[in-house]
Image (cartoon, rainbow, N blue to C red; front, side):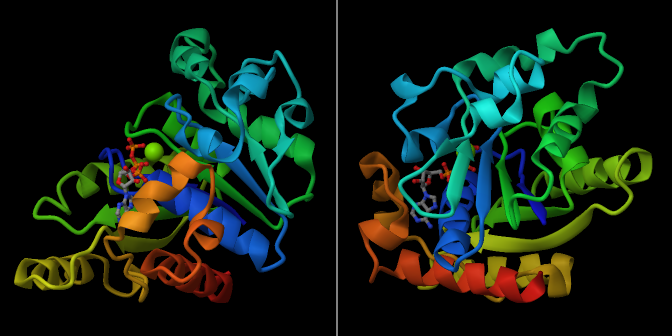
Length: 250
Ligand SMILES: Nc1ncnc2c1ncn2[C@@H]1O[C@H](COP(=O)(O)OP(=O)(O)OP(=O)(O)O)[C@@H](O)[C@H]1O
Ligand SMILES: [Mg+2]
């Protein structure tokens, strides 16, 4: 299963979900590869010291290195990482004029031949060439939606892009589900927003709702997933529950 985590809105919990879903699946005994496709490299920085990296996903996508050369182990057993660096921001320019530019990641992934049970892809907040590569390469899309007044703004463009990719290049691409993030269940507005999202996405909305939890915000700074940083926090409980729901769907 190759799961692309995408939403072109910034700050909705893509990276937090990528990190803690990958770690959760690894703790459940699955062999997991987390691919960081965001030039901001937030997933990468959570798991490895960026100064220790010599090869990144940018080198793979521009044919300068093989996938195996870029992949590094993390401190979590069963979890490997294909790291990003800021140089990934140059990808669009590098691939300009290449008729296969949307297929780069998919082609490169064929080098990995079934080593991983789950590949999780973290994407930047755009619908540009990087995210398109992630849609073409994936079997599933997971959309985090922030529980806020403007929650659904932009989801039309996102769904339209996914439909286009399905039609043109990846017919079996499936919406795995929508996960509501950064939710505040104490407010009436919060409840309304959840209802609105459920009206649009129906049974695609995960039962698990990720609550706002300050421990989730802190954990990347300490280079840890939520499970070791604050194992008894609400954040750990929520992401474990999401992990289990995804295991049961896949
Ligand atoms: N459930 C949560 N509770 C509290 N803070 C959270 C939660 N989820 C994410 N955050 C924080 O909100 C900010 C945005 O989250 P995150 O980086 O995961 O979003 P993103 O969608 O990956 O952002 P970008 O679009 O910039 O890549 C971060 O500071 C993160 O630590
Ligand atoms: Mg991010």
